[in-house]
Amino acid sequence: MLLDMVKSYDEEKMQYIQNVWTQVVDFLAQRYDHKKIVSFLAKVGIIGIEESKQTVYIGVPNEFILTQVKKFFQKPLKEAVQEVYNPQFTVSFVVYDGFSK
Image (cartoon, rainbow, N blue to C red; front, side, top):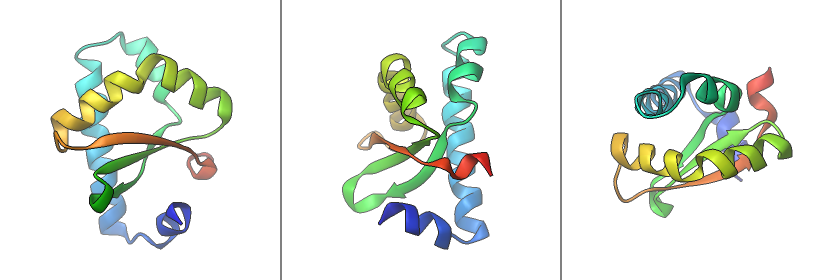
C-alpha cells in the first residue's frame, strides 16, 4: 500500500520527493497567483512516485482540500509534473494526514 511505503522512505528518497515538489510549486508560482498557490497547496505535497504506473501521488490532508485542489489545480499540477519531472507521468490524489505532523 502506498501509505505504508511513505513510512519506509529513507532520508534520501524523502529529499528527492521534496525536491520534485519544490520544482512543481516553483513552476506553478511562475504561472498562477502566489496567494492562490499558498492557500491551496500549503498542506499538500508529493507522497510517492510510482515509476511502473507513471504516476506521481499527491497527498492532501482531508476531503475538503482534495475537492478544492482537484477543482482548481488538477490540470496545472499535472502540467507541472510533466514539465519538471517526466512528460509521460500523470498525477493521482490521496488523502494523507502525514503532513500535519
